[in-house]
Length: 107
Image (cartoon, rainbow, N blue to C red; front, top):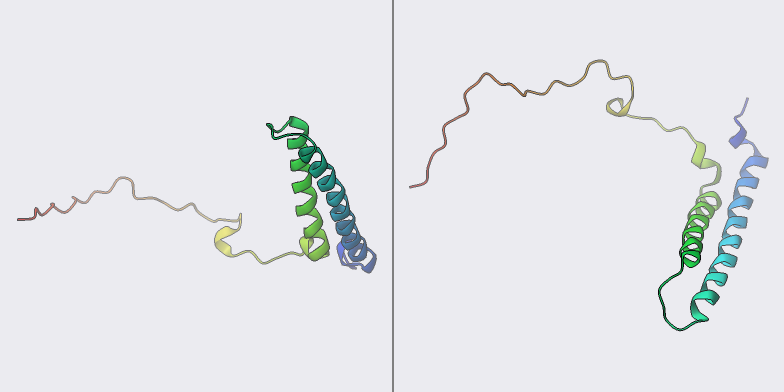
């Protein structure tokens, strides 16, 4: 049985959702552009900063869904050193019994 993201309908809807998000980003970007250029130069308002954050979120999410689509949910192999099943913790040599080598001075 295929997982939900491997079906044709899910792949198409994810790509379509990415295109929709990019269309929404175009609308937000045009609204932001008109609000910024309608007044003389001044400090950004909180509403304009919020629109900038929303624009960034829409662009990143829309591009990820449009170009990668269902590949965002593919499982990838994780190397053993990054896995959570670490058998024993690494021991650091904090308390060494050896004497450090004497420093040699330059003459």
